[in-house]
Length: 64
Image (cartoon, rainbow, N blue to C red; front, top):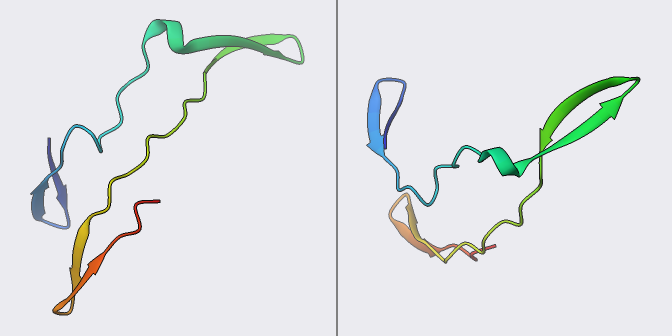
């Protein structure tokens, strides 16, 4: 997926990009007599450590 920020374009992987919920991921709730649909919470996947560089110094993210 191609994204842009302030005129700079960059690509992201599908793992990072959130997916739209499927129809069965909704649950019905009621507040003050009005029904509405909300998405069910999901557990986040553990992120793999990523090698980063800031001002020429290499870092490895903790993955949390």
